[in-house]
Length: 269
Length: 241
Image 1 (tube, rainbow over the protein chains, first blue to last red):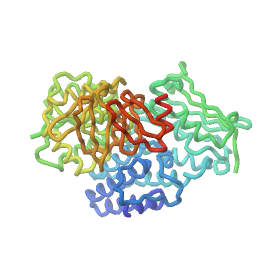
Image 2: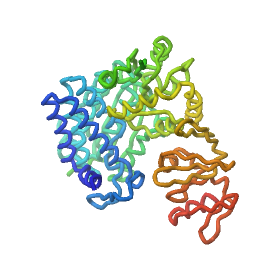
Image 3: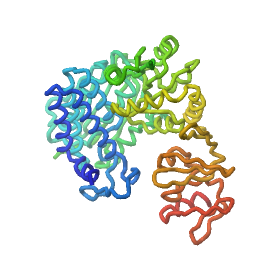
Image 4: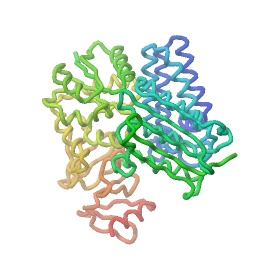
């Protein structure tokens, strides 16, 4: 009974809000050990919820039900790398135990990222504004995690109506994630530069960064967490002909070194 | 006293682990911490740890790289991992201990207790298994039994049978071993080009199949009858014929 209850509530963003809110209150009350414990409990539930239900070792007397009856809750529902999620939670736990004042700020960002992702879970397209907010939150969390080892700039060309323009959900985020995980995180002076503009009927997202070269055709990179595959899945809202992702190494550019370009027909609300 | 070394490439998380270890037990003494394979090799040599907490992703390589390079291993290892399917599979196959991030205090206490009760010399055998799996040519798995570590060669394993959270391994020489883990864990571990889960409670080694009767019964060599779930029938036939 208890578990079905949790499953039903878990993917409700309000549950995330409430649960992480409790952690925050405990920190405010300087009950850091309790806060850390509450957070570990949250993470345990999250891990349970992320496993396909059929795979769980469930005692026979417990019935698992999903609130929408849409079948087992799956990893895909969260759409964000579980490695990142659990590492982020671990960072928060560490900050709490260390009584680091950044704990609350980090917790806030993590909570709003999770909620933003969960709220848009049933959509394939979201506004560019929302996607950028997710990306901003994501990057600033990673910055704390990697001790500010990289810098980033996001440039949106003037006059771009970020509220009206629609983009496939979490594609830009997936690109940034690849840049950080495979490139900049291993450097002391990493750089990520995001440039978004319109080119005639297309929306262009250019991401330049330095670090270990990413080659989309290399099996070791594609096998682990195939970002092009993820991108493709998330691009289903568009015809195959109307978008492309390209990856290039810029030998002449020492600062950035590499470039991933996402080009797609621009869509409006 | 348990001399402990912590290897994790994220400074904040490392600090968190140290924090947890410090509040845990007087027995545990942290003798060093670092975030790279290079530093870990130096510290492992000079600090003489009994126990090592090892992250998978390190700045200049992986925890597995460290294990391949380190000489004179006299310490136990507990892997720390967030959620890496591939790595977790390799670790489980070698029956090495691991702890998931974020770290639960109680779980931490219990893995440490378990680690120190096992002599480090057992470890080399298990690391060999881990390595063979990482190289993608695993020929054996290790079962953690009550008082020993049992190596099972995959070409001797006929089938696995589960019963209420326990799994029994049946070997060609009629021996069998029971462990208190669910069959689901082993389904992930056993190479799927050779093993198939034919039923909720059974995994069979396809090399030992004798015949499949049209009525839906599967027989292994030695007239062992194995149930086949209706929804697994198609997958089984595809693999057999």
